[in-house]
Length: 260
Ligand SMILES: Cc1cc2nc3c(=O)[nH]c(=O)nc-3n(C[C@H](O)[C@H](O)[C@H](O)COP(=O)(O)O)c2cc1C
Ligand code: SF4
Ligand code: SF4
Image 1: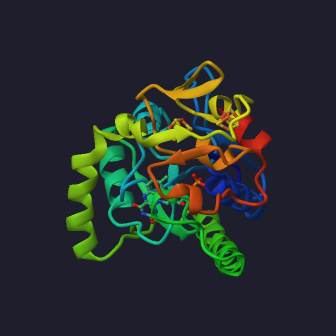
Image 2: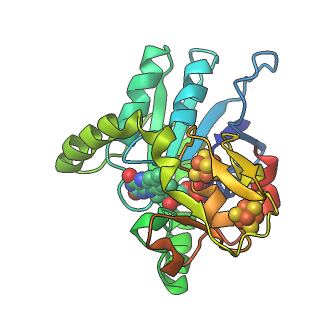
């Protein structure tokens, strides 16, 4: 079968999942969601995938924008994978609803747990734990590939009811605040003005004043700037100087730069 997988990523977990799935499926393109749906390029594969991280228990704004612009054949088999740190909550239910408004059917939705890149709550955990998660994720990717090859219509995966009630309320309350959450970013004296943070930002949110980054309140909260800074000079709030940085070890900075 032919498939196209569209991905959005901050620290590479979603790109890693997309690539592993493409390997398992064969004949599959892996394409960044950056920019907009290219209407001139006719997309008509047998299956279309969306792979993206969970943010604040829901779908990130750039993914919502991408989905709202999607134009595919109504009978297309569309699947999604919500890559998360352990709490997928209502993300895939939300996505299915948004797609239905656009007359698209989300045929199947899967969740995959990977190390968390949400550094304000701590680092990604010990390396052995990360390796265990990659192993489990790889196994789940193989199972997902079998479902996709059979074009199986499946109910979307979701978290427990209490999570979906409480966390969906938090998602809704915080959604409009996300662009301004960059107020907590700052750079310390390790910064050497390399400007990588600005290049890796999917939102063109970082400019420079006197050689130091400045955040301009159109943030998507992907944490790419902080996690990919070679000097570990970007901080968020007070605690991050003590926390370990993370990106998926098989994904390179150049991979993420190409996706912008
Ligand atoms: C702003 C933000 C919010 C997050 N919220 C959640 C969440 O609600 N539930 C969860 O399980 N993981 C959450 N995470 C963790 C990411 O979903 C997870 O680390 C994901 O694998 C990152 O994917 P990426 O490397 O492709 O960017 C959050 C991460 C960020 C940066
Ligand atoms: S990536 Fe880090 S070192 Fe480079 S300019 Fe940004 S903050 Fe400074
Ligand atoms: S400023 Fe940092 S966290 Fe915000 S969108 Fe850009 S790279 Fe992501």
